[in-house]
Length: 453
Ligand SMILES: Cc1cc2nc3c(=O)[nH]c(=O)nc-3n(C[C@H](O)[C@H](O)[C@H](O)COP(=O)(O)OP(=O)(O)OC[C@H]3O[C@@H](n4cnc5c(N)ncnc54)[C@H](O)[C@@H]3O)c2cc1C
Image (cartoon, rainbow, N blue to C red; front, top):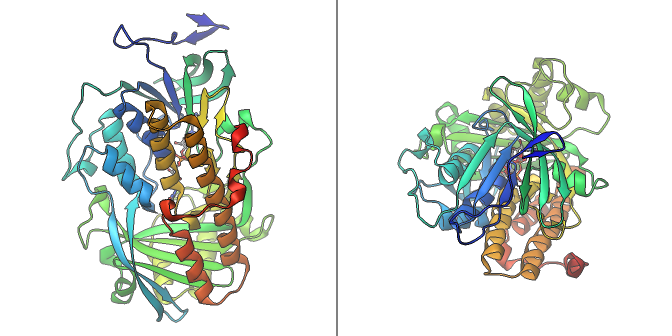
């Protein structure tokens, strides 16, 4: 059927010929979109996932992520591969600039990696096999599963309220690289298109993603390449360092193809450094190897040598030796500007569009809660569609979490980067950020206006 001269993929449909099922379109195929797709599939809902990246698999982001409570809970509920997703860390240690341990506490935390989580989710969503499944298995197919379709090279450009449904417009890239304008009608659109969400921009153009005044420099080093001094503080530990304008944390994550075998893992560093907006240093850092000034991210391998030399020198001058060693030994560092963004609400167009994960609220990484937010939003959405919770509960739990954690990230991030405090206060902030969602007391303000959503 043709719509406005473009190709249309049809109307609302029934899958079993008896019972109408909603057509759910997910925008974005990173962790947030895959959490939603996997949960909805398991609850019997059909989904079509549109991801703008033209390749069938997203690139390894080369990064460790802290697997918060809801990330672990998600895999407990929905993973059918049986592959362990996380490497535990048992202690937090704090270093001084000489590299001595100045504080140590027992605190179990689970570390995973972006790529392991991604491949396990792809296995669960559309049964993509990969070496990451070694020690696990391709998930069983259940009669009750919803149907899934993953569309690579599909960039959503517009959504339009058509009363009972939403018309989603997108550019579909073909094998020849040409893009065709396409539309699809959806009963529900799940926007999981990240912190720069195009769907959020269409719905709420005044909400902007703003630069927080500092960046995070990240990279990994194979465990075997770490010096004994480094391994002593980084292995199965979450290791921190604070100085004015600097925070560095380094920890062990899964290695190649997700292996959690000791000796085969990676040491992952996360180094926050102040680079004022409009400064020459920020321009130097964010101008990539080809001379292009990037706005938010310089991907692995794209940092210009001049910029990387500047960063390494900063490392030698200001970091403990074990952390400077990581900067010296990493081969594919990358940089991200730290930003802030939050939507005013998550349900739009009469509940036919829902924002989840970073599209709803882009947290500062100090919260270690972004992946967990995406997992929690996806689990909550499945519960709402399944009737386990009602709409009011869905809005309350997802919006209060988004508001509280986004504001906390700004507060502790600014304290860490722009104030000079005794180390005890940084420790207290970090412990506060680690409180489990279930045990967290939300500010009364987080309820403001929720009844009007
Ligand atoms: C390097 C790195 C390290 C991180 N470390 C941590 C950590 O330690 N702890 C933590 O909790 N979280 C961490 N995160 C964040 C975490 O990965 C994300 O919060 C999580 O993946 C949820 O993000 P998302 O899927 O909502 O958005 P994103 O990951 O931004 O994905 C959005 C997806 O939407 C696609 N897309 C965008 N626009 C369109 C469009 N118009 N049409 C179609 N597709 C579109 C993009 O291509 C992308 O695949 C990290 C992220 C990165 C990149």
